[in-house]
Image (cartoon, helix red, strand yellow):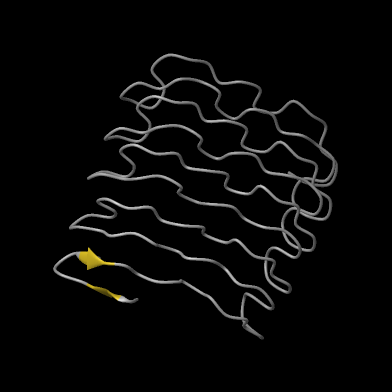
Length: 171
């Protein structure tokens, strides 16, 4: 932590890179997870800023073997969780050795939130890939939520296909 904390988690400052080195023996074997939080927080979680990439590197020995986890939050938050911004892809890469063997987990949240969880936007594909070696063996889980929310969880929209595939070996 490279910031000044006052009362809450982080009052005013910029926490630097969560892990920006190569570890051996721990979770990350060889890689560089990027900045965990790269923004200025005030009182709450994140007041105004942009948390950068959660993991933007290739790790070997840990969960992800070969691939890149893109930005966890890629937007500007104000007061609440995310006021006006876009939460990018949760996993948008191919992992080998970890959970996902060969595939791409699509966008976890790709919408604009206002005050609450998701005010106006769409949650895209939860898993849209073929995994080999992990949980999912041979399958493509389609859209987890593909609807527009307003205020509450899901105000107007429809939950798409929860499972639209054949699994082999996994859950």
